[in-house]
Image (cartoon, rainbow, N blue to C red; front, side):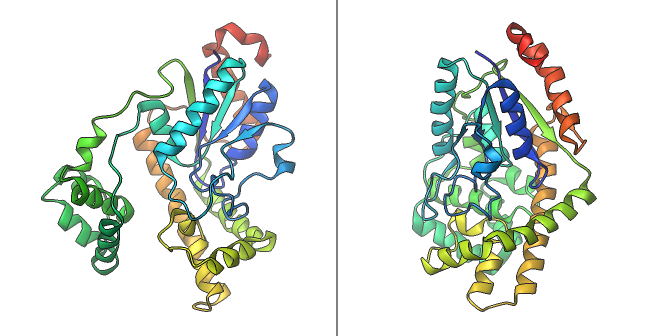
Length: 316
C-alpha cells in the first residue's frame, strides 16, 4: 500500500488547495480531517471546498453530517478507516487534510475509549463554565485530575470542561483514558505527516480577508438557516468559527460590525492555538513555512519519494 499523506496546519493556511494538488499529481483522493467541514450545513462558514475547487479529484467525508448531530472523533475515525481500506484495495494514494489535530492524532496514535457523557452532566458543566469560567473549572478539576488541570491553560476552557465532564460521568480522570488508547488506524510506516507553518502576521491578515469574503459568499444565509432551526447553541456546528457571532447578529443582539470583528478575533486566536498544538502534539512532523504551493509540493515529494520507495516513478 502507499503511505497516506497527512497535511495539517492552522485555519486559512492553504491546506485544501495543497491537498487537491498533491492528490491530482498522484491520481489519489482527498479525505477530510476537519471537524467542521463534515457538516453539510456549513459549506461557506467552514470553507469547505466547492465542486469547482475539487476539480474532479474525489473527496471523502465532506458535508455528510447534519448540523443537529454531535459528531464525535470516534465516528470520524471509523468513517476514515472505511475510506482508507477502500483506497488501499484500489492501490490509490490517500491525502488526508484538515485543521482538527485530534482527528489526526487519533488516526496515527489511537483513540482513547471514553464513555459518552450524559446530557444532564453536560448541561451542569456548561452552567459552571458560564458562571465560573476556566478558573472555576480548573479548581473543580484539580482534586481529581491534578496533572491535567495544571497542564491546561486558561485559554483551554473547552478542554477543562471536557475533562470535568468525564470525571463527573465516570469517576475517573480523563488522563487515565488518554493512556488507554485503541490501536491506531495508520501504523508507523503507513503514513507521513506535514505541518504548514506560514508566517503568522500574513496568516492573520488572510483570516480577516477570508472572513469578509465568506460574508459576501453566503455565510449569513447559512447562519440564518441554522438559527431558524432553533438548534442547541452548544452543538459543534453552532460553534464553528464565526458562527456564534453571526448568529447573534441574525438574532438582532449585536451589530454587523461587532459580529465581524469578534469573529475575526476568535479565528485568529484559534489559529494561534493550532500552532501551539502542532508544536506539542506533532513535534517530529516536517514543517513547511513557505506559503507558496510550489515550495510546499517540492518539500512533500522530496520526502515522500524516499518513503514510498516502490513507486518513485510517480513523483518524477
